[in-house]
Image (tube, rainbow, N blue to C red; front, top):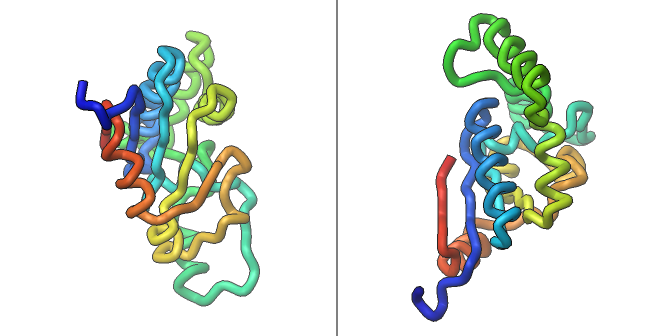
Length: 162
C-alpha cells in the first residue's frame, strides 16, 4: 500500500434515492465494522437524506424556499430510484425491510454516527440549494467545502461515488 494511503473509506453521496442512500450506508457501516475510518460526503440531492423532517430556517429568499419545498425533507421522504410507482414501491420496500429486520434508513444514520462514521455536508451544495446548518440532522458532524473533502479523500484506500 502507498505510504500516504490509509485504511480509510470516503463515500461521496450525490443521489437522494432511497435505494442508493441505503447502499451507501450499508457499505459505510460495513467498512466501519471492519475497522476502517469512514467519511460520507453528502452533496446536492444526497443532502435530502440528512435533512431534518421539520427543518425550517427563517429569512430565506424565494429561490431558497422553492428548493426547500422541492427536495425531500429527511430520510423518511426518500423515494426509490426505480419502481417507485406513486409511492407503492417505496412503501413495499420499507415494509419488506421491516419484516426482514433490515434497519430503516433513519436507524442506519444513527448506527453510522454511533460507529464513528463522519457525516459531512457540502457547503457549496447547501448554499446553492438554500439549506442552512440548522436544517440538517444532529448526526451531521461537519459542513465543509470540497477542497477539505478532497484533501481527506486523496489519502483514502477506497473512494466511492453513490
